[in-house]
Amino acid sequence: MTRVLYGGKTVTADVWRSALLAQRPELDLVMPGDGHDPGSVDIVLYEPSGPIQNMAPYSGVAAIQSLWAGVETLLRNESLPTGPPLLRMVEDGLTLGMTEYVVGHTYRAHLGVAAQQKDQAQGIWGAWNPPLAQNRRVGVVGLGALGRDAAETLSRLRFDVSGWSRTPKEIGGVRCLFGEDGFRTLLTDSEILILLAPLTPETENLIDGAALAAMPEGAHLINAARGPLIDEDALISALDTGHIATATLDVMCTEPLPPEHRFWTHPNVLVTPHIASVTRPETAAVTIIEQIERFESGKPFLHTVERERGY
Ligand code: NAP
Image 1: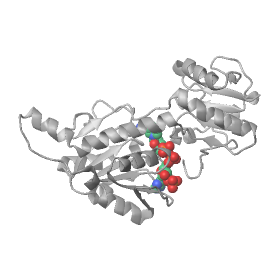
Image 2: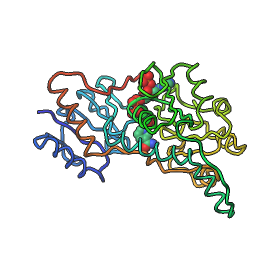
Image 3: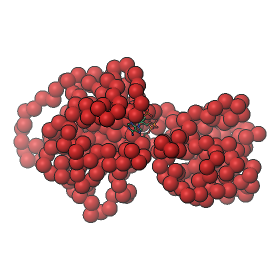
Image 4: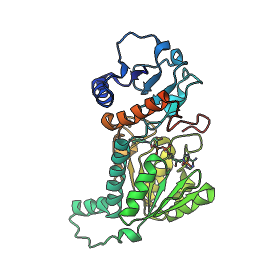
């Protein structure tokens, strides 16, 4: 029988145990504190903040399943064995939660909520009507598990949506762009730009001073991906001049955000503490059991990470 080692945070161990056993009551599940021979484990469930930091003893496992969608921390773990496939977390709860965050904050930017709050604080009765969503150009950077659902949902809400990915895509209702030219078009077009790409050597500092300057005057930025996708100093400059009207930042270069960081007090920044979405054990267990069943029936795993690509 397939043996699964739970290597997630200890505080959430009971919730994960219940969720996994609800999907498969007979699962051979090794929990933190259970003595085990690493050589007997088939699949490791890994979380960077979990108890397993030394991955070397697990070089013989069939797969390492990340409990997070982002795998850059796992890839930086020097003890990570080179053999086993790495699996990203793709699951409905994580995707739906991210789409809710993105939709909510897109509407907030679209409706000018921050500007209205500022007017209210000064007692200003400022008459201003936003355009209709169909006339609001929204761009999504990354069209993977999360970006695609967000882009499709925004399109169903009648926003004028473009998306950008590394490889070409076809998504109904979404203008799909790729490559360097596609990135320029996305930047110059997007009044609201949403970041949902992984952190890789190619995406680090993707939104630098030049990228921000290419965006329309008064554009809004929403980062629900990873902090280092943005050059934070360049963003603060663009916010100071008003070229970027607002930034909604769920992720930062340093987390938790240091107390002295400008983002905390900048009038045009909303900081959310890396809560845009989260892996939900009840729904994630469905994905994990599917991966186990694929292993047992000799089918290829889903959502495998290409290590050289970084995601
Ligand atoms: P995914 O399925 O791997 O999709 C990644 C997307 O980004 C793909 O469309 C990919 O293009 C595109 N991409 C990657 N490198 C690119 C490049 N150099 N140029 C253009 N496009 C590029 O990942 P996901 O599951 O959607 O998750 C995205 C990220 O969200 C995660 O890596 C994680 O960092 C972040 N996240 C944040 C939170 C939070 O709470 N803030 C929660 C979950 C995840 P191709 O399709 O062409 O490969």
